[in-house]
Image (cartoon, rainbow, N blue to C red; front, side):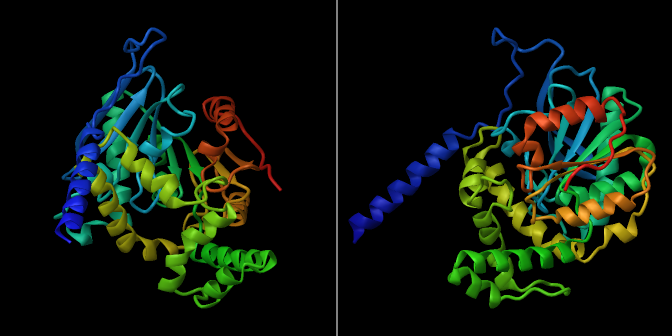
Length: 362
């Protein structure tokens, strides 16, 4: 028995040692074709006081003089910089990108932070404060705002409150009314598993029915990610496991220290607990019928994590001086990762050029 315990202890120490060695927490410079730091580029991991709280971010770009883009990650509480490294870059060639890690998440997680300070209202205020920091630092009158999934919930509201700060708003898997989206996803998944003859998943879903009330059943929330990724309607079309697709890559990332990796997941759990229910019960389509700046929405055709049909319907009614809707036919919830070439074309030919695009799609 003592030998078995000793082996387990030694094994745990070895794993911890490897993780510690593999987690220097440093960001490499952007290199030129000779492997030297690229002149005029920026690549830094930094912390800035935002609304009285030390908050972390990664800032990357091949040329500091280019337009600045603030990226609002999803979740709630799930930073995406480490995940973006697994896919072809779509932003850093044409923008200086700030991958801000929101209050209570990732680099901005603080164990003693009062729960009452983690609210959508506070995060909207933080978004505008980070925007002001970037405008001043890079000498820009306006910046671009890109927001993914949960990030689009606070991003849309930030853009509505201070449109004068932004060149344009880019919504990636735009949230509108998430409670309705969850009901659509539940119905779709149940029908799909029935057609596949997967009686186990059908039985588990039927034990956790979803309605237009919050909170959603705990049994459904425990099953949700597994069911979505099994059907290819989750984070990406190809991702079949959150553990293999997100959890393990976060521990393999070298830009976080070991402590920061632990905080990444502590922040994910606490942020979801505090922000999920207020988010799903808010109908942004009713709350924000108009935006006084150009709006571009990109959505995966196979996305049931956030409803494609709701985003399309919102776009069609949305009043904005310039707007475009783009259907990514091969994508689920992360079109910027799943179809990077199409995303690059949209960024260069429409967003940066200020061009008008009629709604596409099916």
